[in-house]
Image (cartoon, rainbow, N blue to C red; front, side):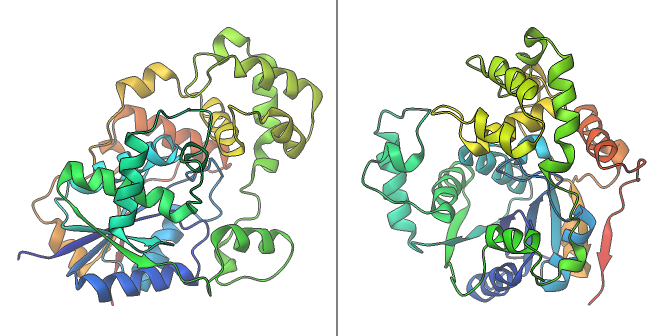
Length: 336
């Protein structure tokens, strides 16, 4: 069966009503036969711990209308927008999908392509944000990612399309804030309140204090002497928020510090990322009957032992961090 396919790139941290809207509108707009979501696992793009397990994200996505759910491991998820888009689309491209559909404040592919051209012709200052590099532009978060998705779609011959961001739905950031302020949220029975940097900072802090700066400098994203600042701040501050704010600089944004700390906590080196700088695998987390039919004859990963050794090690570290004994990978089947 030749299916029309569409991919969506998601975090689900947490899964909220705006995500259900995204799924329904994508199916309505693209009329795809198979909707495929690739979802950040354990950590998100900004280097935050995920409030939901991959199993719960998969369950909720399938119930909302996705046909196939794939995983984006933390080493590929916790990256700046350009690399995040690169890895996600690279994985989706292995299934030869037709389209990718994403939420957009601008909701105009031509405008986003124009922003992309301006970025290519601008001498980019790495320490500045995309908006700062483009001077007067005020590009909002979904469009920042959208620009990168479009660039990757062009590389793989995938058609990009957009859905207008609906501001009547709370953002994931607002949802998290209200939840930690004690306000009940949609589907918050799935949230794990301990999945924050406040919980894990004591382990990071001890590791920073016990490691010499030469060792710290070998970890991915540890550049420009940031290891000295992180180690010094670990000595000074016992609380995560104090440590985080003291570590931010013109070069290192809040998100960059969080990502860098994730790579240190998981002990992922620059050499390892260089050796594994492509994500051309399809790691399946769940599917329904349509997704199952679509996967027939395709090379995918469904078991822990099928993961590359590099990703096996990261998966184990993430599970050990969350106090879980090793749980064998289970692929979820959802029958409507």
